[in-house]
Image (tube, rainbow, N blue to C red; front, side, top):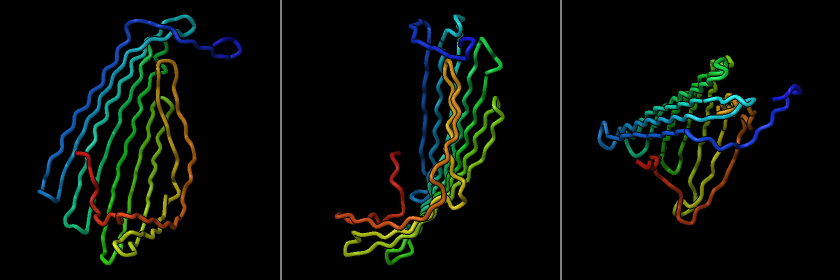
Length: 217
């Protein structure tokens, strides 16, 4: 950065950088065919270099994120899904340690699906997110509630009419926080908030009638 606050950058090859990533997960039933738990942990670490005003800066980034999920299907008419995840990220710079920061992102989700019979279904979701960054004094909570009711129609249940309410509390905002070897990125973008949508769908093979989700593991 020069005296006019103009920043110029160019790529430079430098030996010695390292990067590590790992993932572990397990899934098992608590009550056979009714209650299942899944848990997962990710960890990553990197050691990278950059010249800032001709001074070599070493940046150490670490991130780990545990998560846990519960799937509850007491019968073929009801399904409840509860999951939470927390992401801890840190960035440490050896030139200017005052720029070191810790970012914590928390996400809590609740999904409820109910089949009332005769082709009528209800789906409701609650998303609660917490964003924290000690470097910038950021602490923001975002609750999002969505709700929909839908009816399957036609022979073979090939059609569906759905009425949906998105972001009932009118709180939606897109937050992106990240760090790299030479910069810190933080953005908040207003999104299409509370709205109602009426939709119609048609599937030649018929609509899905099960309230249970299909999980990969």
